Length: 92
Image (cartoon, rainbow, N blue to C red):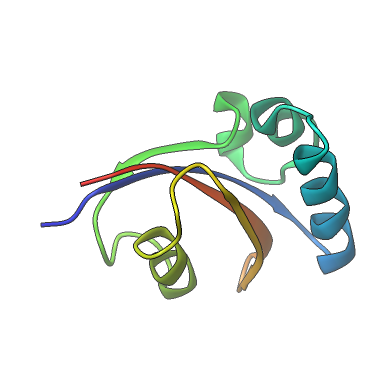
């Protein structure tokens, strides 16, 4: 079974998500941005979600996590929880 490791951050608006993505692309550390701005409890680990398989996260996550290039920030990805930035750190 496929496995992926990823980190993410979660915010309430698409605009905030886009602004944070620009900050990360300009050189800010993803983990630090997640710790400061994310609404998800994973922010304590810099947004690290650990390793998971297909179907363990919401479908919008699976679509990105199991197809996006590694180590590139993806998003905004809208889910029922808000807007996410995702970065796939490993996949097997």
